[in-house]
Length: 75
Image 1 (cartoon, rainbow, N blue to C red):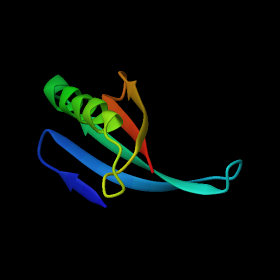
Image 2 (cartoon, rainbow, N blue to C red):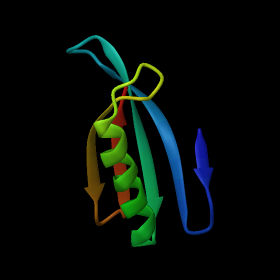
Image 3 (cartoon, rainbow, N blue to C red):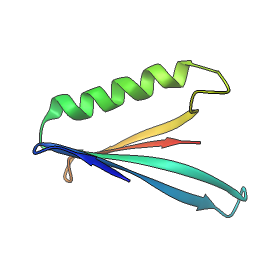
Image 4 (cartoon, rainbow, N blue to C red):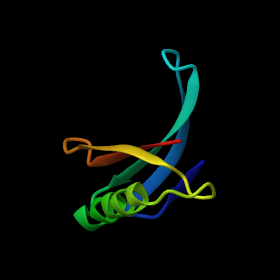
């Protein structure tokens, strides 16, 4: 799934961890604007604090500066 505009786009990829035998999702946010990746990181920080069965569980966030890409790892 991809979501985008002229200055940014995002997609969700489902991945498999063979060590834990579990699937997990990675939201990939690409943007030439620093504000967009800052918003993605703010989303991560907020969701990381929440614990509810109807809200996705966030695990980690990574930023690749050379690719201007934020990776959000979640269930």
